[in-house]
Length: 482
Image (tube, rainbow, N blue to C red; front, side, top):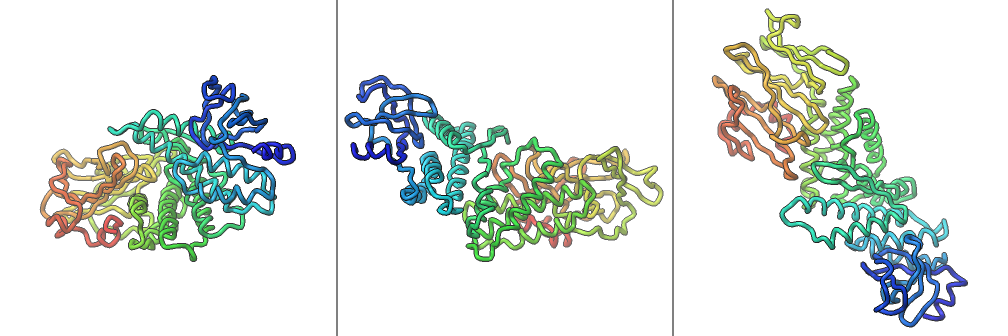
């Protein structure tokens, strides 16, 4: 190794720490005082050698000391040696737990390699490792709230790896979502992949990473969210999926379906044409090859299905209403829509019932029972949450009740009218929502007087009354039976 150290004067040479909790000591002895604790991926300047120790300087912490030579790997920073570093990157790219080390090698490679040597593969690897590291941190947050808590050592290790990655310029953003901290990679490497001459597979991974819905800050304002979703749609459309594997094609289609459902909702809020976006969301979801879904993708398919289900009325055209009661909408306060229930003797000035909302009202969803004593209407307060308004006649006149998709904080879900049970006060509904991280789908019989569920099942065929009286048009249009 003496000849190697001597050569450092002629070529740049660094030492990359390969072990967690490696000690930087004040002297080249195991018994010497520990200066700091080093982690995999830390890079050190080599200044000499003493016995089986290297004399180094840690620029990140501005500390000098000695580290055992067996705890580091020497990396030359010459263009001719860059391919050696790249071979290590290819190995570490898909090695869980070695993200900080892989990011360190990638940083060394990008610094050493000539400009014409650097391809999209290096940035693809960098982004993949950074994203996996962010997922590890988020998963630990999830486990912290469960009965099986992660060890303190594991939390310390992941936090240290994040610091190492940040030192190399890898940036992460964090925010609170569903009671836990969501950590996401900012995607700079993936943006470079999209700008370079990358393969379709590399671009698909970059597009999927940059358009993750869980990495959108919940505090994003509506106009910013609209612009972001349009950008997400553009990124996904730039991926040529014709040569991708089926499972990657599925992932692109599911993500497109989710994004276009959000755009349909936002266009409706802005009084823009939303039918194209609504149809695009339905078509992308319908194009998913369910036979090629991986176990991981089944959750993504459920997620996409619920998101499309919330805004599916954007693709529908209102039908002629021949019932004696019907709804009429008109603008209220700025951004508000007022809904009036009218009939021959009760116009908009003297309605049977009235309610104003800042939510999106889907008039095409209005359904009246045969006795004209109840009307169901889809109302969407968020791009991922749709409720059902029930107008029904009582002894005290008409009232409006709101049925949510689930008895939880609004997050992801929808409830929709599925049919009337003749000569009764019962209504059929379909609910699909994500509750405590689990997707639940139910087909229920609801008592309109009490709003209580009298019976329910996971499939319509398992509930005789539901199967018998389900509305044919609902069965044709719904995505809950996908």
